[in-house]
Length: 378
Image (tube, rainbow, N blue to C red; front, side):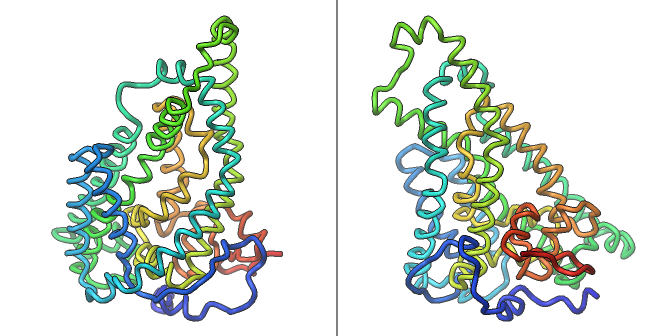
Protein backbone atom coordinates (compact mmCIF):
# COMPACT_ATOMS: atom_id res chain seq x y z
CA UNK A 1 0.00 0.00 0.00
CA UNK A 2 1.16 3.51 -0.78
CA UNK A 3 0.44 4.63 2.77
CA UNK A 4 3.01 2.16 4.11
CA UNK A 5 5.94 3.61 2.19
CA UNK A 6 8.69 4.99 4.41
CA UNK A 7 10.22 8.38 3.83
CA UNK A 8 13.79 8.26 2.44
CA UNK A 9 15.09 9.64 5.74
CA UNK A 10 13.36 6.91 7.79
CA UNK A 11 14.52 4.16 5.45
CA UNK A 12 18.09 5.42 5.57
CA UNK A 13 18.09 5.39 9.36
CA UNK A 14 17.07 1.71 9.23
CA UNK A 15 19.92 0.76 6.90
CA UNK A 16 21.54 -2.39 8.32
CA UNK A 17 25.02 -1.85 9.69
CA UNK A 18 26.39 -5.08 8.21
CA UNK A 19 29.81 -4.96 6.59
CA UNK A 20 29.75 -3.62 3.03
CA UNK A 21 31.44 -5.97 0.51
CA UNK A 22 34.88 -4.84 -0.65
CA UNK A 23 34.55 -2.79 -3.82
CA UNK A 24 30.87 -1.98 -3.37
CA UNK A 25 31.59 1.57 -2.18
CA UNK A 26 34.39 4.10 -2.35
CA UNK A 27 36.01 4.06 1.06
CA UNK A 28 36.26 7.51 2.65
CA UNK A 29 38.22 8.67 5.68
CA UNK A 30 37.35 11.37 8.16
CA UNK A 31 33.98 12.68 9.21
CA UNK A 32 31.61 15.55 8.56
CA UNK A 33 28.46 16.99 10.00
CA UNK A 34 25.12 16.19 8.43
CA UNK A 35 22.60 18.56 6.82
CA UNK A 36 22.41 21.02 3.94
CA UNK A 37 20.53 19.51 1.00
CA UNK A 38 21.70 22.37 -1.25
CA UNK A 39 25.30 22.43 -0.01
CA UNK A 40 26.65 20.81 -3.15
CA UNK A 41 24.67 23.24 -5.29
CA UNK A 42 26.32 26.14 -3.46
CA UNK A 43 29.74 24.66 -4.26
CA UNK A 44 28.71 24.30 -7.89
CA UNK A 45 27.57 27.95 -7.88
CA UNK A 46 31.06 29.04 -6.83
CA UNK A 47 32.57 26.90 -9.60
CA UNK A 48 30.13 28.43 -12.10
CA UNK A 49 31.06 31.97 -11.01
CA UNK A 50 34.74 31.21 -11.59
CA UNK A 51 34.02 29.68 -15.01
CA UNK A 52 31.91 32.69 -16.02
CA UNK A 53 34.56 35.14 -14.79
CA UNK A 54 37.19 33.40 -16.94
CA UNK A 55 34.87 33.30 -19.99
CA UNK A 56 34.79 29.50 -20.04
CA UNK A 57 31.02 29.58 -19.46
CA UNK A 58 28.96 32.21 -21.28
CA UNK A 59 26.94 34.77 -19.36
CA UNK A 60 23.77 33.26 -20.85
CA UNK A 61 24.37 29.86 -19.26
CA UNK A 62 25.54 31.45 -16.02
CA UNK A 63 22.39 33.58 -15.78
CA UNK A 64 20.05 30.73 -16.70
CA UNK A 65 21.51 28.18 -14.30
CA UNK A 66 21.64 30.75 -11.49
CA UNK A 67 18.01 31.76 -12.10
CA UNK A 68 16.90 28.12 -11.97
CA UNK A 69 18.81 27.49 -8.74
CA UNK A 70 17.33 30.59 -7.06
CA UNK A 71 13.83 29.63 -8.22
CA UNK A 72 14.18 26.12 -6.83
CA UNK A 73 15.42 27.46 -3.48
CA UNK A 74 12.42 29.79 -3.22
CA UNK A 75 9.93 27.08 -4.21
CA UNK A 76 11.34 24.73 -1.59
CA UNK A 77 9.36 25.32 1.61
CA UNK A 78 11.63 23.34 3.89
CA UNK A 79 13.41 25.32 6.64
CA UNK A 80 16.59 27.07 5.58
CA UNK A 81 18.50 25.10 8.22
CA UNK A 82 17.73 21.94 6.24
CA UNK A 83 18.51 23.49 2.89
CA UNK A 84 21.88 25.03 3.78
CA UNK A 85 24.40 24.05 6.46
CA UNK A 86 27.54 26.10 5.87
CA UNK A 87 29.41 24.76 8.91
CA UNK A 88 29.04 21.20 7.60
CA UNK A 89 30.14 22.07 4.07
CA UNK A 90 33.98 21.85 4.42
CA UNK A 91 33.87 18.35 5.91
CA UNK A 92 31.30 17.19 3.36
CA UNK A 93 33.40 18.46 0.47
CA UNK A 94 36.43 16.70 1.95
CA UNK A 95 34.52 13.44 1.77
CA UNK A 96 33.24 14.25 -1.72
CA UNK A 97 36.73 14.95 -3.07
CA UNK A 98 37.81 11.52 -1.87
CA UNK A 99 34.99 9.88 -3.84
CA UNK A 100 35.75 12.04 -6.88
CA UNK A 101 39.44 11.16 -6.74
CA UNK A 102 38.87 7.43 -6.36
CA UNK A 103 36.34 7.38 -9.21
CA UNK A 104 38.79 9.30 -11.41
CA UNK A 105 41.55 6.77 -10.66
CA UNK A 106 39.16 4.01 -11.78
CA UNK A 107 38.55 5.88 -15.01
CA UNK A 108 42.11 7.12 -15.64
CA UNK A 109 43.15 4.29 -18.01
CA UNK A 110 40.13 5.05 -20.17
CA UNK A 111 41.14 8.70 -20.30
CA UNK A 112 44.57 7.63 -21.54
CA UNK A 113 43.02 5.52 -24.28
CA UNK A 114 40.55 8.29 -25.11
CA UNK A 115 43.26 10.90 -25.44
CA UNK A 116 45.31 8.61 -27.71
CA UNK A 117 42.31 8.07 -29.97
CA UNK A 118 41.55 11.78 -29.95
CA UNK A 119 45.04 12.50 -31.32
CA UNK A 120 44.19 10.19 -34.23
CA UNK A 121 40.74 11.47 -35.13
CA UNK A 122 40.51 15.12 -34.12
CA UNK A 123 40.71 16.49 -37.70
CA UNK A 124 38.03 14.05 -38.92
CA UNK A 125 35.86 14.60 -35.87
CA UNK A 126 35.65 18.33 -36.50
CA UNK A 127 34.52 17.74 -40.08
CA UNK A 128 31.80 15.33 -38.97
CA UNK A 129 30.40 17.59 -36.24
CA UNK A 130 27.31 19.73 -36.60
CA UNK A 131 27.83 23.49 -36.08
CA UNK A 132 25.73 23.35 -32.89
CA UNK A 133 27.42 22.11 -29.74
CA UNK A 134 26.24 18.88 -28.13
CA UNK A 135 25.50 20.91 -24.97
CA UNK A 136 22.96 23.06 -26.79
CA UNK A 137 21.36 20.18 -28.73
CA UNK A 138 21.01 17.86 -25.74
CA UNK A 139 19.86 20.60 -23.37
CA UNK A 140 17.24 21.74 -25.90
CA UNK A 141 15.90 18.17 -26.12
CA UNK A 142 15.56 17.91 -22.35
CA UNK A 143 13.95 21.34 -22.13
CA UNK A 144 11.27 20.52 -24.70
CA UNK A 145 10.55 17.16 -23.09
CA UNK A 146 10.53 18.47 -19.53
CA UNK A 147 8.42 21.49 -20.40
CA UNK A 148 5.89 19.12 -21.94
CA UNK A 149 5.62 17.26 -18.62
CA UNK A 150 5.36 20.56 -16.73
CA UNK A 151 2.47 21.78 -18.90
CA UNK A 152 0.57 18.47 -18.69
CA UNK A 153 0.97 18.23 -14.92
CA UNK A 154 0.16 21.91 -14.37
CA UNK A 155 -3.02 21.62 -16.42
CA UNK A 156 -4.09 18.46 -14.59
CA UNK A 157 -3.45 19.99 -11.16
CA UNK A 158 -5.07 23.38 -11.78
CA UNK A 159 -8.06 23.01 -14.10
CA UNK A 160 -8.28 19.24 -14.58
CA UNK A 161 -10.86 17.03 -12.90
CA UNK A 162 -9.98 14.90 -9.90
CA UNK A 163 -10.17 11.86 -12.15
CA UNK A 164 -7.68 13.41 -14.55
CA UNK A 165 -5.35 14.31 -11.69
CA UNK A 166 -5.27 10.75 -10.44
CA UNK A 167 -4.81 9.35 -13.94
CA UNK A 168 -2.11 11.75 -15.10
CA UNK A 169 -0.37 12.46 -11.83
CA UNK A 170 -0.88 9.23 -9.91
CA UNK A 171 2.85 8.92 -9.18
CA UNK A 172 2.74 11.55 -6.44
CA UNK A 173 -0.10 10.30 -4.25
CA UNK A 174 2.36 8.77 -1.79
CA UNK A 175 4.39 11.86 -0.98
CA UNK A 176 2.44 14.86 -2.32
CA UNK A 177 -1.07 14.48 -1.06
CA UNK A 178 -2.71 17.69 -2.33
CA UNK A 179 -2.79 19.32 -5.78
CA UNK A 180 -1.18 22.45 -4.33
CA UNK A 181 1.88 20.69 -2.96
CA UNK A 182 2.10 18.54 -6.08
CA UNK A 183 2.07 21.66 -8.28
CA UNK A 184 4.84 23.24 -6.25
CA UNK A 185 6.84 20.02 -6.54
CA UNK A 186 6.38 19.97 -10.32
CA UNK A 187 7.87 23.41 -10.78
CA UNK A 188 10.55 22.77 -8.15
CA UNK A 189 11.72 19.65 -10.00
CA UNK A 190 11.68 21.56 -13.27
CA UNK A 191 13.92 24.40 -12.07
CA UNK A 192 16.24 22.27 -9.96
CA UNK A 193 16.59 19.73 -12.75
CA UNK A 194 17.74 22.46 -15.11
CA UNK A 195 20.77 23.01 -12.86
CA UNK A 196 22.04 19.45 -12.78
CA UNK A 197 21.26 18.82 -16.44
CA UNK A 198 23.61 21.64 -17.42
CA UNK A 199 26.50 19.47 -16.20
CA UNK A 200 25.09 16.28 -17.74
CA UNK A 201 24.68 17.94 -21.13
CA UNK A 202 28.16 19.49 -20.94
CA UNK A 203 30.00 16.20 -20.61
CA UNK A 204 31.15 15.91 -24.22
CA UNK A 205 32.10 19.58 -24.52
CA UNK A 206 34.11 19.42 -21.28
CA UNK A 207 35.95 16.22 -22.20
CA UNK A 208 36.79 17.16 -25.79
CA UNK A 209 37.75 20.68 -24.70
CA UNK A 210 40.12 19.20 -22.11
CA UNK A 211 41.68 16.84 -24.65
CA UNK A 212 42.21 19.68 -27.14
CA UNK A 213 43.74 21.95 -24.53
CA UNK A 214 46.11 19.17 -23.46
CA UNK A 215 47.04 18.45 -27.09
CA UNK A 216 47.87 22.08 -27.77
CA UNK A 217 49.77 22.57 -24.52
CA UNK A 218 51.86 19.47 -25.21
CA UNK A 219 52.36 20.39 -28.87
CA UNK A 220 51.11 17.00 -30.04
CA UNK A 221 50.07 16.77 -33.69
CA UNK A 222 50.36 13.44 -35.45
CA UNK A 223 49.55 15.08 -38.74
CA UNK A 224 52.75 17.07 -38.67
CA UNK A 225 54.47 13.71 -39.34
CA UNK A 226 54.78 12.81 -43.03
CA UNK A 227 53.84 9.12 -42.57
CA UNK A 228 50.65 10.04 -40.70
CA UNK A 229 49.68 12.53 -43.38
CA UNK A 230 50.18 9.87 -46.03
CA UNK A 231 47.99 7.38 -44.13
CA UNK A 232 45.60 9.92 -42.60
CA UNK A 233 42.40 8.31 -43.87
CA UNK A 234 43.35 4.91 -42.46
CA UNK A 235 44.39 6.31 -39.06
CA UNK A 236 41.28 8.43 -38.72
CA UNK A 237 38.96 5.63 -39.86
CA UNK A 238 40.36 3.12 -37.36
CA UNK A 239 40.30 5.74 -34.59
CA UNK A 240 36.67 6.62 -35.30
CA UNK A 241 35.64 2.96 -35.41
CA UNK A 242 37.31 2.32 -32.05
CA UNK A 243 35.58 5.39 -30.62
CA UNK A 244 32.19 4.06 -31.70
CA UNK A 245 33.03 0.71 -30.10
CA UNK A 246 33.90 2.70 -27.00
CA UNK A 247 30.18 3.20 -26.38
CA UNK A 248 29.84 -0.52 -25.73
CA UNK A 249 33.14 -1.06 -23.95
CA UNK A 250 32.50 1.86 -21.59
CA UNK A 251 29.28 0.34 -20.21
CA UNK A 252 30.91 -2.01 -17.63
CA UNK A 253 33.13 0.78 -16.29
CA UNK A 254 30.46 3.48 -16.19
CA UNK A 255 27.88 1.23 -14.51
CA UNK A 256 30.45 0.12 -11.93
CA UNK A 257 31.45 3.71 -11.14
CA UNK A 258 27.78 4.67 -10.92
CA UNK A 259 27.00 1.84 -8.51
CA UNK A 260 29.96 2.52 -6.24
CA UNK A 261 29.34 6.28 -6.21
CA UNK A 262 25.61 5.91 -5.68
CA UNK A 263 25.95 3.39 -2.88
CA UNK A 264 28.69 5.49 -1.24
CA UNK A 265 26.36 8.50 -1.19
CA UNK A 266 23.74 6.36 0.56
CA UNK A 267 26.15 4.75 3.00
CA UNK A 268 27.92 7.97 4.02
CA UNK A 269 25.15 10.01 5.62
CA UNK A 270 26.87 13.46 5.38
CA UNK A 271 27.26 12.87 1.63
CA UNK A 272 23.68 11.63 1.39
CA UNK A 273 22.41 14.79 3.08
CA UNK A 274 24.47 17.24 1.05
CA UNK A 275 24.42 15.61 -2.38
CA UNK A 276 21.90 12.83 -2.89
CA UNK A 277 18.95 13.32 -0.52
CA UNK A 278 17.44 16.00 -2.72
CA UNK A 279 16.95 13.44 -5.51
CA UNK A 280 14.87 11.28 -3.16
CA UNK A 281 12.20 13.89 -2.48
CA UNK A 282 9.97 11.93 -4.84
CA UNK A 283 9.21 8.60 -3.16
CA UNK A 284 7.23 7.67 -6.26
CA UNK A 285 8.89 9.96 -8.81
CA UNK A 286 7.86 11.44 -12.11
CA UNK A 287 10.21 11.92 -15.10
CA UNK A 288 10.81 15.47 -13.88
CA UNK A 289 12.47 14.02 -10.76
CA UNK A 290 15.07 12.35 -12.97
CA UNK A 291 16.92 15.65 -13.34
CA UNK A 292 17.08 16.57 -9.65
CA UNK A 293 20.56 15.11 -9.26
CA UNK A 294 23.30 17.28 -7.81
CA UNK A 295 25.75 18.71 -10.37
CA UNK A 296 28.57 17.24 -8.28
CA UNK A 297 27.05 13.78 -8.60
CA UNK A 298 26.66 14.18 -12.36
CA UNK A 299 30.34 15.18 -12.58
CA UNK A 300 31.37 11.75 -11.26
CA UNK A 301 28.83 9.45 -12.85
CA UNK A 302 28.78 11.05 -16.31
CA UNK A 303 32.53 11.51 -16.76
CA UNK A 304 33.28 7.78 -16.58
CA UNK A 305 33.09 7.05 -20.33
CA UNK A 306 35.65 9.29 -22.09
CA UNK A 307 36.23 7.04 -25.11
CA UNK A 308 32.51 7.03 -25.94
CA UNK A 309 32.55 10.84 -26.01
CA UNK A 310 34.85 11.00 -29.04
CA UNK A 311 32.07 10.31 -31.53
CA UNK A 312 30.64 13.27 -33.56
CA UNK A 313 28.36 15.49 -31.49
CA UNK A 314 25.15 14.61 -33.33
CA UNK A 315 25.81 10.87 -32.81
CA UNK A 316 26.47 11.50 -29.13
CA UNK A 317 23.21 13.45 -28.78
CA UNK A 318 21.20 10.75 -30.55
CA UNK A 319 22.74 8.13 -28.27
CA UNK A 320 21.85 10.15 -25.16
CA UNK A 321 18.28 10.69 -26.40
CA UNK A 322 17.78 6.96 -26.98
CA UNK A 323 19.13 6.13 -23.52
CA UNK A 324 16.88 8.78 -21.94
CA UNK A 325 13.72 7.62 -23.72
CA UNK A 326 14.31 3.88 -23.31
CA UNK A 327 15.74 3.73 -19.82
CA UNK A 328 16.34 6.89 -17.82
CA UNK A 329 12.94 8.60 -17.98
CA UNK A 330 10.87 5.38 -17.59
CA UNK A 331 12.97 4.57 -14.50
CA UNK A 332 11.30 7.57 -12.84
CA UNK A 333 7.77 6.85 -14.05
CA UNK A 334 5.63 4.87 -11.60
CA UNK A 335 3.50 2.15 -13.13
CA UNK A 336 5.90 1.25 -15.91
CA UNK A 337 6.18 -2.45 -16.70
CA UNK A 338 9.76 -2.25 -17.92
CA UNK A 339 12.12 -4.48 -15.97
CA UNK A 340 15.03 -2.01 -15.72
CA UNK A 341 12.64 0.82 -14.86
CA UNK A 342 11.05 -1.19 -12.06
CA UNK A 343 14.54 -1.88 -10.71
CA UNK A 344 15.21 1.83 -10.12
CA UNK A 345 11.68 2.60 -8.98
CA UNK A 346 12.11 0.07 -6.18
CA UNK A 347 15.22 2.01 -5.15
CA UNK A 348 13.15 5.19 -4.83
CA UNK A 349 10.49 3.40 -2.81
CA UNK A 350 12.73 1.48 -0.43
CA UNK A 351 16.03 3.42 -0.65
CA UNK A 352 18.31 0.68 0.71
CA UNK A 353 18.40 -1.53 -2.40
CA UNK A 354 18.94 -1.43 -6.19
CA UNK A 355 21.77 1.10 -6.31
CA UNK A 356 22.91 0.15 -9.83
CA UNK A 357 21.79 1.30 -13.23
CA UNK A 358 21.59 -2.37 -14.19
CA UNK A 359 20.45 -5.25 -11.96
CA UNK A 360 23.70 -7.18 -12.49
CA UNK A 361 25.67 -4.73 -10.32
CA UNK A 362 23.25 -5.24 -7.43
CA UNK A 363 23.37 -8.99 -7.93
CA UNK A 364 27.15 -8.88 -7.67
CA UNK A 365 27.15 -7.00 -4.36
CA UNK A 366 23.97 -8.45 -2.86
CA UNK A 367 21.67 -5.42 -2.98
CA UNK A 368 19.18 -6.45 -5.63
CA UNK A 369 15.53 -6.46 -4.58
CA UNK A 370 12.59 -7.42 -6.77
CA UNK A 371 9.26 -6.26 -5.23
CA UNK A 372 6.85 -9.08 -4.40
CA UNK A 373 9.61 -11.62 -5.06
CA UNK A 374 12.45 -12.98 -2.91
CA UNK A 375 15.51 -10.75 -3.10
CA UNK A 376 18.46 -12.17 -4.98
CA UNK A 377 22.14 -11.64 -4.56
CA UNK A 378 25.41 -13.33 -3.82
